[in-house]
Image (cartoon, rainbow, N blue to C red; front, top):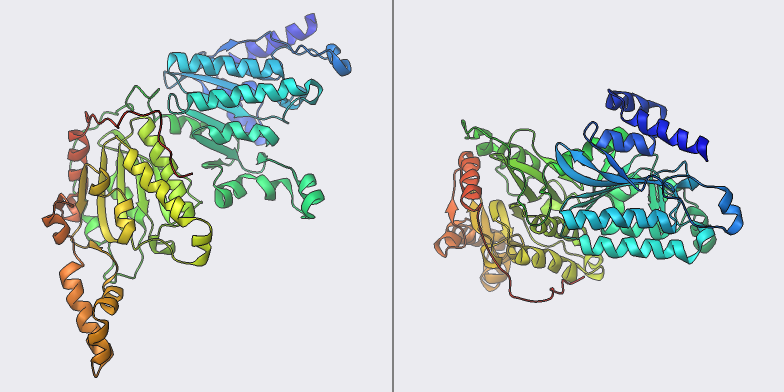
Length: 513
């Protein structure tokens, strides 16, 4: 017992040595960091205060009374990141494989309760083999206690989960209920049932990495929002993520000092191709609009037909949602609708204004989309925008067709300011498709049907394929020169800074899940 206490004290002393961050960053080349090294790297120097340092498990079955480790496989406490209070837990895989016991869970629950009471983010560094089998239902009950707190903390304080090792079975549901999940490439995985069970039940041969690795969850399932090359990279991304968020739902995001200069962006004048069918990268528009090097993309490799991420405009933190013409022509589909809806709801929870960049030809057609519920999933994005009370500004760069025009933060569902470039086309559908329906009889009766279709297509485009009809009705607040976009947005978000909007009183809505 005395030897173990001395060892623990040595580790605590080592964690507080000067230059610890440099030492830890060098360590990553040798493999995974220890739990204490991860905490040390995440938090400001000498700011960590550990809670429950001497807690041990209570199990006496299966000879467990002989295996006593202080802390019981998880380091919990609080500290600061860039001077701001956060609560953190880091599972220690070197102690019983980081498995969750009754007391292990109690430690995590304690800091989650403190985070809600004191209004600060919770960061979980997950590296665990799962429930401690020797404790049976007590360990399962511990998971449920954590899950309940995840739900209660949702929308109250930001919750971030970093998967830095195994995370399997019931353990995966806690990260799934937090706001953002990060995974480390090649050293972390998440799945409900492992490769051996999959093989037994379905006869599929699959590795842990293929089944639930960082690449799989960042591209196919969308479970993880960000991936990192190694532990150090993962922790640096957590810090960056936190910089865009407030401490809790009662506060506004931190505003960085910004000195106004020449805010014209001449490159935006030439960003839209001459052909309406030619794609361009919406990220190029984002980079020209936001503060330099401030765009931090979320879910970059999942549902690539829409982009979401955090940025700053004039020092203000904003959430960016934009259709991506480079993928599926920017159409909305099942995955992109879910991806954007989740992001919109997070921003609304924590008072982060929304900038929506629109170039959407509609919802993606096809049996696959219909059978996988494009109706109910598209409605999630519509619901998320309609429910949001934060400042909401839209910019239509090119196409805004059909129901997708409504869904993408239109004036009709509560957007505060809607701008359009002269290149914007706002209509029920494209000129060709509309002409084929409206002028069907005339085209069929014409001697040269192709020529007649071209004439009618031009007629329809002249009447509808521009933003001015929408502007006449007040659906567009202003048609702006692309080079002036950043100036307009800076002024709009400054004007909306103190917006107050309240939803009808209710217990909660019933989003179409």
